Image (cartoon, rainbow over all chains, first blue to last red; front, side, top):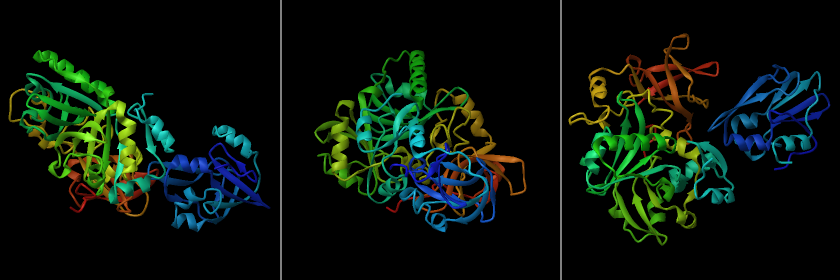
Length: 124
Length: 362
């Protein structure tokens, strides 16, 4: 699956889609594929503050545990209840319905472009 | 990294690969859960050609194996198989094995891929002690496929003339599978009915594809691991290692002490007379968070004194709740007891249950 170009990426395999002062965050198709079937998602509560590159959640597959790193400083304003009740959505639609959290950010760090991220994962 | 003769086929089928026992093996083709379910409800085929095939043949084979393993190979009937262990002089487990008796003085020993060198070295040095020369590591010559699941018999029967109804559990026969000479074994590592088929590595692609065409779903090692865990079967490097003895692992019955000398006998005799300080147990939890290998166990949620460790764990795909195996101090290991597991900083309760977690309905 190609990485949408309308968003930014982190080296920890998150994608960040900015709309106004809110960023929607998920994990990439590459990360979902590497994890295997996602069976449990532990997301921060609404109102939690996030710190750039600090762990703010966990994504568990049958085989392993992936950590969700906050790609920016801010506050969680929404979590995706769909992936909480149906974690497999992270695998089936990582860039869409499988989004994880929305963060109202205070600063926007410099992240990777789709092209840079594809180079990182060897897809480029 | 070594590859099986089917590596290119796995890649063609879209597999992801992982290092297992030093081999580049398919971890999944599409979905761990779908492959797991295929084995529980239909039939899956696993490439397990990485496993070691050691033939023990010629005059003195039975005596040699009796001396080298903790079980008594000479008691196995021709055409039957038995689970066994090879231990060191201290009673530590070098590997767990399946021993098949092909004829009076002809045996096939299947060992784990990661232990191939250790097992072959141990067998050869024990052979020298006895002046026996019939140990031959033929792992590179063979492909090994496991066909597992309720439809395994139907699928395999479609491509072999051997009457599989005449091949009971834990037995071995020979026959032609998809035009290829093979050993057919009714054994497996999934908790389902099924077969392991051993044949020339040259024919690996032909037989593998014939099985897929006949309806077997290609399954990777991720599903194999959750399947064996649900079935309460140990995995070397997790439940078993050189520091674990058979009594701790619950395999006291595999050790036949009522006979003459064999490697590890005096240590195992001592160990059998004592209550082991720790025991392998099955644990179940609630919710969806799995206790995984190396997580620590405590008596209760407040305690900081470690009483055990998880050796394997997952959210059981079949049962829907977390299951795990682990070692626990013996006095705390009674069925029904609860323990607290540290899941990356969060404590969760787990209850000790009898293994296996899953048993197929017959």
